[in-house]
Length: 458
Image 1: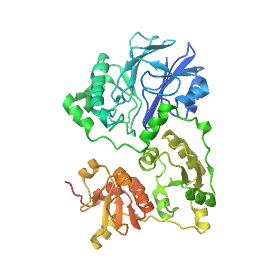
Image 2 (image 1 turned 60 degrees about the vertical axis):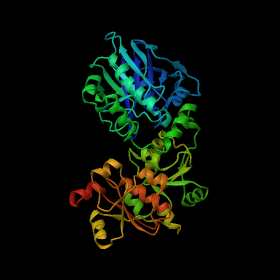
Image 3 (image 1 turned 90 degrees about the vertical axis):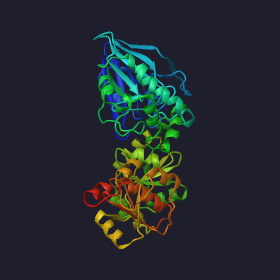
Image 4 (image 1 turned 60 degrees about the horizontal axis):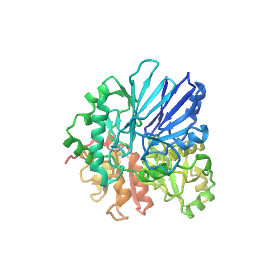
């Protein structure tokens, strides 16, 4: 049996190929939208991709099932009641798929979503019992799937389903069975996921906190403290249910001259500047939002920008823009009209230019010592705030700031701080785009501050 894991950096998406070289066939499970690596692997091993399975309707990334079907003619398999609008072969609890010596048994495991499945995989060339489980978003390494994506009205039911699936459905398998989840570190489909790509049921039963809770404690944990839900999740679920457009049918973003970028803005395009914080701070197109390109930037873009809007990128290079287009399309951002490189041409045309001063922690300390009314705006999560913050700081987590704004005058002098400086630049750029005039972003964030200066704790 051929078994291979694929990882999409940043979103933490993990997908898999299961195949039988003797049969010359393979299935891909939970594919991402860019599919070249699956095709290359199949070609390398002389396999035809004949089947595609999504373990559930994904919320954090656009499924690549339509792309793979278009490229290979493979059938798509989904849980029978998942509610997808495209042609597929339905799967039910207890169904079996045979790919030569590789056998996949379907387990109905609701909880993360109402119609999620896990897959028990057996290599008959070695034995007749499952050696691994593809656990989808039910069980992660070090964590479990969040139960709230189906909506608040179903939360209690989903928490109960999640607990039952973890303890009863997976309880039928021995400790030695390996688990391979659909997500790893970086995903917001759970909390505190490990960077390890796999584990065993035995290790998780012993060391995974969530598997060692009573139902009452489990329900409390699943009702509180879940990661913020990005803006793009609802859009992605909708796209994955109806079947997303093929990438080949989308507009291919080209390079925009400064005049074209200005016209795009006038036409309502949101400008997303993906350059690093210092470059954005030194000069940027007024009104643009800074989401510095990194493996995690699709997640942060999902927090800040509605995926239904048209966006244009400002990048450090054409290569960076191209990488960002692929990454952002995984997260549901299809309407990317083009990209502009740097801001030299923009400035050369005499256009207005924005600035976002980058303040060191020492500079912030001097400002606070001198000006009593200077505001420190802390945009970290609640748990980070509770662990220690600057005395007198105002706490507004980033997503709340995005969705609800802040109760401060636009003339206030505000220094925005987070853990490292990445989120603070996002938040500060949002404030600048909303008319706040005197905004600073703190370089190094609380990670630097707490090494030298004191912090307050509740």
